[in-house]
Length: 63
Image (cartoon, rainbow, N blue to C red):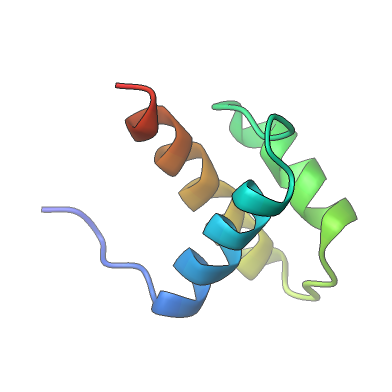
């Protein structure tokens, strides 16, 4: 069983993917930098969780 992420992390992540199509990839480090540039998230932990969910979301969408 995996970790259950809060709804706000999922909502922000999917909103970013839909708003900037083709910008994000399955690379966590790259997504982490993009999340810092495109949002005003002040917490590093929150930025990493959003970038992690984007990475996982995109890797499962491609299957």
